[in-house]
Image (cartoon, rainbow, N blue to C red; front, side, top):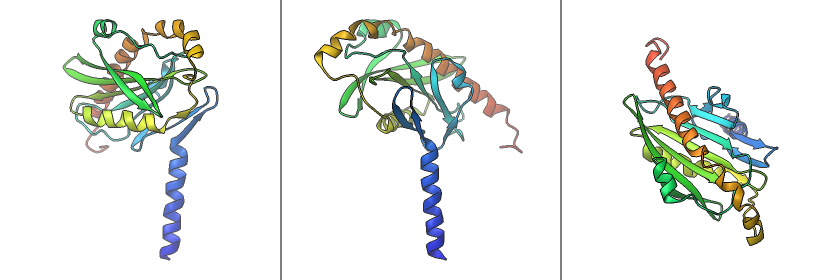
Length: 208
């Protein structure tokens, strides 16, 4: 009986893991939805958002953490956004590790209607088309947001276009045109976290 129970448990864990693993055939990458997160239909309403996940149960009274995977509609090179540009957008530069590569990222803290949001961005140089991972968390969840960014990046598997000096030169002009993606996603992240906080506040005690 015990062996049967253990086998059933193992099968359930395997099935759950399979369900959380997502493959994108168009862009040739796969990624794992973090444990405790569910699909967020509100997030995927934006045309460039491939996947949007939100905490199933809030870990903070301020709101739930939101994770998005956004397409950048082109490849990116190794050129980094200047500190002056990021500063003008209210951001600070960051570097994350993906596979054996140091990739560009950014952090931003935004306050809106008394809610402070910590948003983290990481741009992944996939071969067919780059994507950006965005993790937005309410104040007090910064450390967990950083951990989620690290684990989500670690789960992302795909071939990179960062191969040769010639390829990097060919893609020089493509990266600079998508700087607008930084602030757009920051605004969306704020709206999503705020929306989730408001929904949490309206849930009745009976449903909670």
